[in-house]
Image (cartoon, rainbow, N blue to C red; front, top):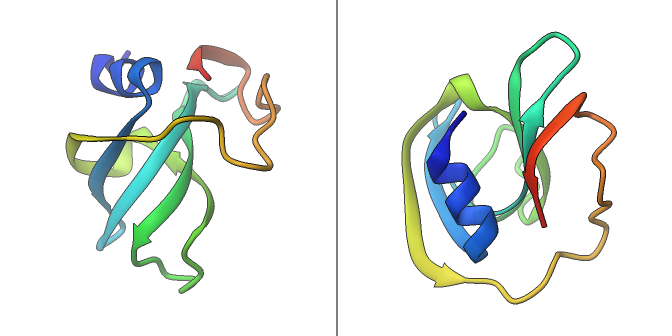
Length: 97
């Protein structure tokens, strides 16, 4: 389990990392595993770039592809519109808003 992800969700800190060659700034909302035991992060990307070019937007990240993870001092105050507690993409949730 990634304690940085849990800490960021619990304290509502923004995260910065590289993913598939793109710098991302995200609001982390849920962290858990899929039915195939892959760790995933549900987050709202607020800044940076992506292959789709669509920012801001919701994203689902494979944790094993996240590089250079940093917890930022900046926080957010509430869950982003569209967030659903009990993320259906996760077989087990380690932490969520």
